[in-house]
Every structure is written in C-alpha cells, then in structure tokens.
Amino acid sequence: MSDEESLNLEDVGAGTEEAETGQKKGSFLSGALISILKWAAIGIGIIILVVTTTVVTFNMINKGRRAENIATISPEYKAKAPPQEYYDNIESIRGVTSDQVPSIFSLKVSIGYAMGNKDINTELIARSRQIQNIIFLYISQKKADELTPVHYAQLEEDLKQRLNLIMQSGKIDSVVFREFVVTR
Image 1: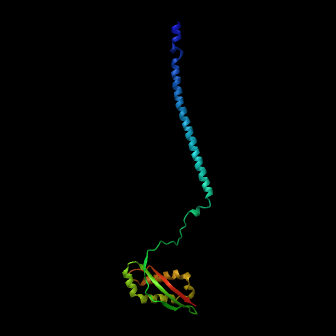
Image 2 (image 1 turned 135 degrees about the horizontal axis):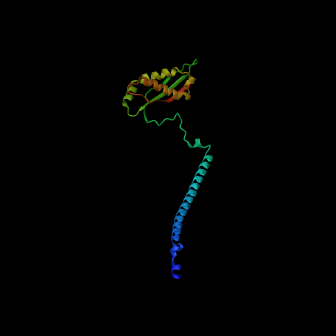
Image 3 (image 1 turned 180 degrees about the horizontal axis):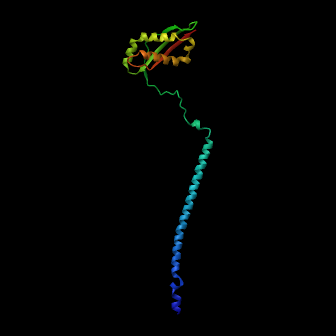
C-alpha cells in the first residue's frame, strides 16, 4: 500500500497543475497586453497634451499679429506692363487754359504702343497733326487747377481713350507726359 498510495499522483490532482500553468500563461499574455495598452494610452495622452499646449501658446502669442503675417494686396495693384515702343515725334503743344484769367500751358507727350507693331507706328506718323490737335483741344478745355501733378494720371488716361477712338490699326497703350508746365 505504500507504493500505490504514495505514487498515485492523478488522484491527488496532478492534472490541476497543468490547468493552473495554462491559466497563468494566458494571464501573463493578457497582463502584458494590458500593460502595452496602458503605456500606449499614456503616450497618446502626452502627445495630445503637448500639441494642445503648443497650439494654445502660439495662438496667445500671435493673437494680434494675424494681419502682419498676411501680405497685403492693394486693389490698385497692377501687374508689370511689358516694354513698349514710344512715338516721340509730336511737337511741343502750347496753349491757354479755360480759366477767367487764363494760364499758359506747354507740354510734350509720348505715345506708347506694343513693341514691334509697325502698323500703329505708321498710323501715328500719319495722324501726328490730328493727335496734336486732339491733345491741344482737350487740355485747353481744362482749368489750371485741373492741370496739377495730382491729375496727371487721369489726364493721361483720358487722352489715351480719346486717341484710341481715332486709331484704326490698333490701340495705343499709354500717353506719357515728358514735359508739362502751367504758368499762372
């Protein structure tokens, strides 16, 4: 009885040790998985905290500087114009203004057009006296106060539009004052 009683391990519960080690093994894997997930959650939490803090800090620092960082674009902005050829052979134009006490004016103009356009150049040569007369009549209708440097850009634009009305071979691009004197 001593041999049979002492060596019978199955009756004592030897199978339960295998089951317990299997449970410990599964418990070890689930414990490691929980630990990994815990550290991943901590890492994600730290990243969210750092990003949030950074965004809030930069927004507080740059609160009043939003307009400074944006390049302002003027509504009057014009792209750079291509180079032009100029017709300079219009003689000096002299006359008087339409004031009660007339002022004397004298001006020289150049007419700009697209480079290489020989047709416009030929027409400008043919119409030079007509162009000179149009400019003379237009400026003579103005008062001396309207012939100040503040008004030059508008005067040039008005003259360009008037001259383009008579042009047949193409449009001129600009009228430029080379000299403009008004004596009161």
